Image (cartoon, rainbow, N blue to C red; front, side):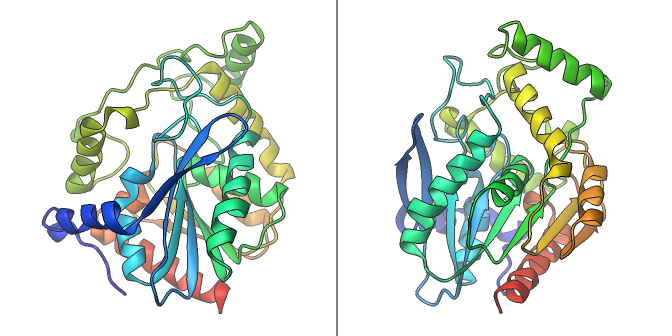
Length: 315
């Protein structure tokens, strides 16, 4: 298998950007509420496909390195920017506000993308790969829609969140009350427009080069920028989190847990793994939240586990 490395990542940017520009097929998918931006590429020798459900703040522009890597390892790749972020449509006049009306809207989009785009271009076996909020979307989708995925790989799935200094019951009450009082489109307390953190204080990754390239991408393309979340998003997310215990998925799951995660609550991942058959959970030592953007020391074992999982469920 080919692994992209931190040491060569900057010198590979021309190659990666050429791949993004010339190999990835990019287009928009019409949905009842707006257009979703998506991309795919199918190598000549592809045996399996990977469909990516990315995290909050993310879009396929951020995933260029991973997409290039997967393509070079002969995976067909499919990815769509979730509604309200990336190059897909945004709900509100202030496009920095992270907002969704209901959490199930995300999984309905994923279903539409899978049936109309993925299944049109790929008839072989496929694995759903996700990160953070994308993992929550993937789990919700798999529980509610008919599908033909062989397995799902969940990186730091958002099955519960940290509410920092606010006790969780109080945060839930505030979000639901604000939504009932017509404040759903307003930023939740403490949330603002996009502000890039310094690397030293970031909670996402311990890889300086990957963090720098992520922020550089968003600096060069301001339309990708996304700020904090609204009360509506928070209320929808809490409703999903409450529903998790009642959802079940029958296909094999692999949960990659980031040991030093400060964004999502890992306890919910263990809880899910314990009640689900056919589920493997591995904690990646020293990892911050964004496992696909971590140091090579963490990222390469993560990708190795992804490839082994793909092989085991598609054999």
